Amino acid sequence: MNEYAAAREASAVVDIPGRGILAVSGPQRIKFLHNIVSNDLQSRGPGQGTLAAVMDVKGRLLVLMRALVTEDTVLLEMPADRLDVIEPLLVHYKVAAPVRFARRPVAVLGLLGPGAVETLARVGATVPADAARESHFAAVVGDAPVRIVRASDFPAGGWAVHAAPEHAADVRAALIASSAVPITEATLDVLRVEDGRPWYGRDVTEDNLLHETGLVGEYHSPTKGCYVGQEVIARLDARGAHVNKLLRGLRLQTPVETGAAVRAEGKDVGVVTTSGVSPHLGPIAMAFVHRSRNEVGSTVEVGGQSAVVAALPLV
Image 1: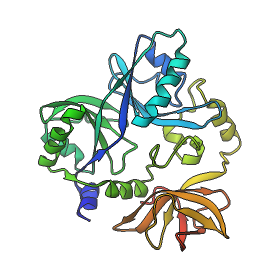
Image 2: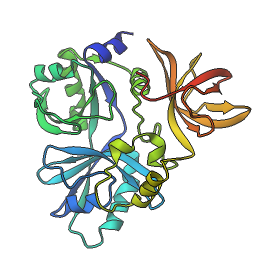
Image 3: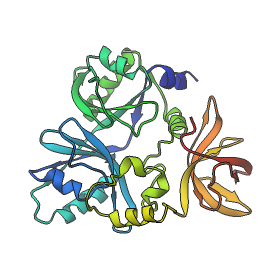
Image 4: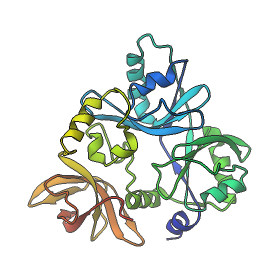
């Protein structure tokens, strides 16, 4: 309860494991990436960024990532295990474009809660007053250079702090010394479910379309030009965004494990992707649920107990 309260009412810090950076450089880096990713990168300048997806031609999600524009590079933050998929794909698409790719090791900390800005100020990292979603700036925390990002895919009004792996412990210690309460991954999962923040790898995979995730408005620009997978997005939009399954919240009677089947009338109609126990809502989960049972208020069965389908976010 103390961890949860810190994230909701004060300031909390959590390790975000398994993240990686692919730095894209070269004079045509933004134009090149703009033609591949799902969101508008062309209009972003240094210090700005966007959430974006990379899809295949069938619209399947190859990654959900964060693209951060600096003076000389675009930093693509994503699950580290997707670098082996995305880098070769970008190399394939670049043909003769003058762009280069370099992996950068990174440790990512999440700084959550309404007191996060004050915590950053205490360590000497003053946040610009006009910090927009995915905006970012360089700072020094605990004598270590970091990049601080307004991370809209994090719950509880989160910020991402990028540091070199060898500096992560010092940065974490400096944030804790400045009032951030360390929290566990279990608490982070509860916050993510409550706020409806699915993550690639944990909740979303190559088996999903962007429309199934409920994230089209955040990861897609309806006004930009062509990109890989655009035809699928446009076709679904034209047909009312009807897909076979949707990511929903579940209000449960008892806690369930990630991967638990969602059932109705003796048939599997979905699967739990992230679960936890909220201090205020009790057992909760996110799950992909088939269209036959994903209407809000529908009753399903998970772990032998009845559950109610709910819209995300839950709070």
